[in-house]
Length: 116
Length: 106
Image 1 (cartoon, rainbow over the protein chains, first blue to last red):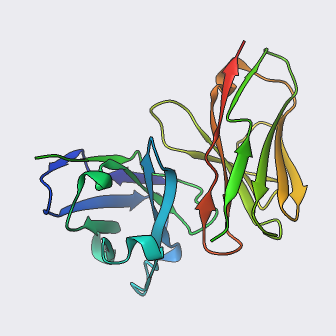
Image 2 (image 1 turned 90 degrees about the vertical axis):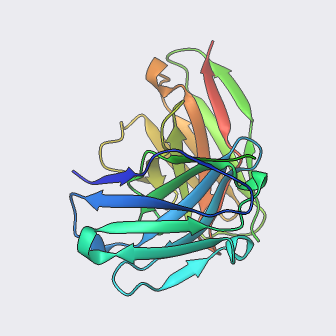
């Protein structure tokens, strides 16, 4: 079955970076884009962007340009999202999901906490 | 950006009730509207795509309708396992989520 397995919780200091992974299984990785979504209690769900897993091409929500960088490693069927220059506002649960819409399979989420 | 407004924000209903959740877009989204269910502590799950298409494996008590700016998710007979927050999501112009409707059992 289709599965997206994300990396674990991260505790990071302001100004640092974190890199979250999303390992796909149960389907041909390069056949579907991967989306990334941010969830906070205050802002709800926000769409960050997506990556073409075949070409590596990306498209970002304007709000997350310069904050998020999406990459893939086709050899391991893994997508990555790096978040840079972290602030407390970046504390959230981050999800990867298969496809742009309709996001038919989701990872379990990776919690990022930014605190000094 | 297209804004998605869901109503009500909280809905309390009894088991067996017919339940209707609403989602209104700030402009025409041409039926490019999906619905997701999120249970506590879990990732969102796709229920309905492109307004009225039931995702594989989703019970037939869930249905979607709408057009233009107004869309609806209906649960024909509420079950205890339907307790969750429901989000609408438009993909007509970029991609934005609604703020969610929390569904509770009375």
